[in-house]
Length: 479
Image (cartoon, rainbow, N blue to C red; front, side, top):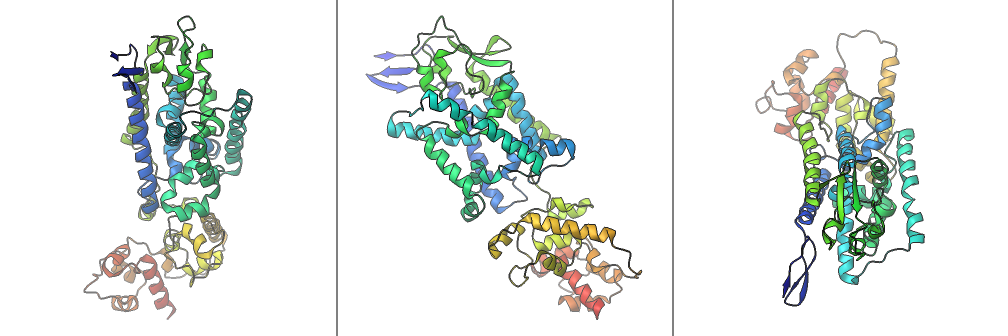
């Protein structure tokens, strides 16, 4: 005997065996969640390898836009690690709240997907959920409110991403470099592991009790035109909706489903055995089916990202050192952890010896081609890129307030730029071309005089960056 359901997502009886038929809307949702999780994981892995090409995790999270909101409004600058992409994503999630509730949480969020996967594994192993009692559950859910306030206001006051060391998603996106994850994000990693373990027994554990972004969207959802409703007159109180809800909402007992907690995932709608008993409304009209909801989320989310990229507005990565040199004026705030000490000297025309001395770093221990974020592991201390930013900022400030020295006919070797050719450097400093070649230990036949300084390394080796030319000119002028 085969009994086909009259609504999507029911149990199908075939030859006496029960099979769960997944509705098209849920296939769409699962496919979208899987795609985003896989893609964003790939971005996280590749960012650890090519940091100027692939965006950091902070640029892909709307909560970063909320953390940096005060800074951009009142100081006109982003917090470190934040890009305009964070604000665009924040704007998208807010738009989605007003037209589709917390659909970002239910249809997009990759951390929610990880928890959902663990919840599915848990149900297969234990064959049941382990919900907390109402007396325990409700008070714990209020933890998200102080978490939201502390980390948002803390970022506004402190001027940095306060939540970052504790963020399980940041830890996840650094897992491909596991040693650094343990070193930089031990608490975030512990929260990630704990969240995934707890999600085996309590689905969406982090979403329910800890997520500050989720509760922020939940607060906005109170004034949304979108809602999930239940028809009390046709409801048969089978409680299938309660069992299906990933965040444990007692759907069966509500007329308008809890707008702070509901993820707008649509899981409960297709399992309802009575047509039109559970339904989404937009501006009080029954116009939205779960599959229409999914299509709307996809169009808005990817449409806005695609449009802002086409307009050249969407930016999620730092410019390369070459691009920064071409832009002209550069501030110390633009120094990034992926840069090397050589990059810093090139960007700000600071002698490498001065930089080492001001940072109290031994050049015999930390080579000049060491990335700033790796210096901490080399020195085994708490060295941060912020230290370099502060030192460079002080040096630049001192140079601006320093009394003018006696005029000199020759500019400083630190003014040499990578775009200058070897010949132009020799002419600028009135140095015989053959003497400059001899000091650089280069062959003029192999490396033509019209070669830009920044390109010498492509022909003669990585040690021949622009800083090497500056040092050679310094030695010649001293002699």
